[in-house]
Image (cartoon, rainbow, N blue to C red):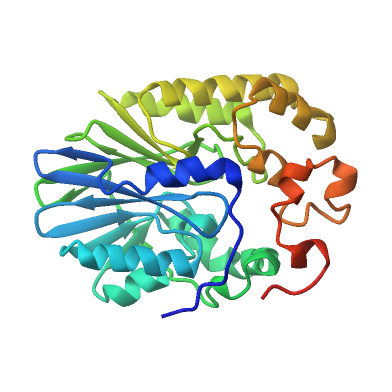
Length: 313
């Protein structure tokens, strides 16, 4: 077992984590959907397990190896054979914790679209360099490279899982998964529920709105499971579209982060603020968090070694 370093957890996410660790988030006619929310990253990334009678399919993994180990143990305790792991997109917080799952289930197929495979293959080292100062040995040294996912659906025993490729939103290439028997949509980072989204990749709210509207082609949608934050009903989609519309008005080109971030925080006071400020990375760029006006509520949660320029434990 990999020793899990003690990492930070943002207080604003504790309620999300407590809620999302429920044993079974949805069930219908024998198909179960379970949610695992990362406990050690501080950003509460969600991954999802679909459980049939004898087999299981995993959608995304946690970010850190410690969380991957916890999820692997949970999957083994379910008593099903994990046949596939499907990835929504190629950001580290949804694939870097794969290794413990693959070690626990050596025959599992890890699948993704070709652009996601390319992103993981070519960008893993740069992402590792970017995040190692924050997470140290909790990051893998080598990535698990997925195989190619083809088609528009896959079956878990008799249960269909449909998927759709997205136009650019949070990232350039991503997909969502729809489970008709549960009337459930798993969105990956298309949606950050009750949290400010992460705009560092594309910062294109207009395209993001288009992606959000496109998934409404799935019907009916009674349950929405975001990549970050608590699940809910169809209103989660509406709230995400509303946020993008406000952001599009407030964070126009030429308006710096230090000016628009406080406005967005005031417009959405109940949203976790982490990603609103974190889009500059864990060190907030060469300027540091102070000159950018990052609130103490954020800087106080950062590991001391990061603030003091020391290596991680």
